[in-house]
Length: 564
Image (cartoon, rainbow, N blue to C red):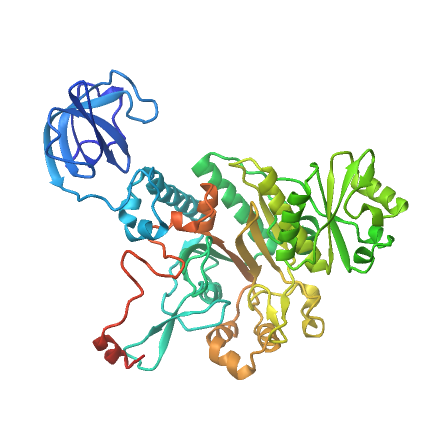
């Protein structure tokens, strides 16, 4: 129906007869001449015609005309040097008055944007988010295909197995009283593909989790999922790092720095987080041994004391706001001192003896105009609370430059975490991660010490991916299951098919799942992953556009043998 798109024509086409199709973006009359901006996914072309009475904004039209040079070029659009003098117009479809402003100049609520998502996506900025996501997906596929990975689809109707979040359940008509689950991830199936000898698998996998929603979570999301046989954790991390460098270069022409590697303990000690933002300094300092010598009870009775040294003289009101951040993350408060005239002043300085102050000056290399912020508590609370204060300072002081991307690896996580509510040990990531070799023989006796051969990939303070070497030895897998609370009968019921598969020789293998939506959102400078999902759900896991979830028909329930 068309010879060109609305983003294609330039001065090389001057004098040509062309046919364009698209939406009427805007109409304006100047000096008795009518100018129309015609829009499609590829761009906007200005057309010139006599009569505009036959159509309005968002009508779909087809125009025939000749390309000519534009009197005043518009450098903001690719077609800005030309316009099309129209000889014929055909209205393909009309449009009623719109319930939202496509340009985005008049703000709409999230509910309206989601209800009329097809209109929301006509905004070129928003449609380009999906175009960019497609480029990222293609870049991943290109790199994986070049490196002998096989793209294999795993089932969407699976056995319900505990993986951390609630399953979505699908009743079976042909097997009344039984249900399928929708996969939270392809975890067990990709492990079985390694047992099947596929060696290198990948999939842009749909993952479905019935969990509470926030800006970086949706009931369904996409994961760049991969698994590799006969590899070490270093092999997997090196491959992923190379792949991400390729994706950023291919899609954004950005050359990434090498990804630094931290142990979990190092990351917590340095940044107060297991997903550190390494785009700026402001690292945590452990001053426990120094301040324990003081007469200040808060410090000398605490298990751990950390501090942040900030190049700013904060007001009391500003410090109070930072104190609230620390308290929101379970710290009892935030102590402070200021540096003035080569000595400590204000705050808790009066409780710190001269010798303690000298040691702090030496250790922290203090100088005038700085403020030192302390958190004293258990090791975990002091580090975590200080880490959140660090992020609050990043935002307040604008310490990072937009468009900067810094990945890091965090490895050697604890394999287990203690569940205070249920008084038992849970897997830190999932139950299929191998303990590091030195813990395999006796992890049951020292669960708090056990480190797993597992790791996270972080970007700009966000968790981007998790991976591990899997447990390919069925006896170790049974021991892990038993330790976290699955007796043999329950383990067999839930995971029997996996344990059975490993009886017949499984390779040493491992892999990762990269959150595609979160990655693309961060690449675009967005914090809400809904912007890069074509039809996202709202905070109640509902779609205002098609009004799902909906009540089932009575006949459907009868067929399924179900009732509410």
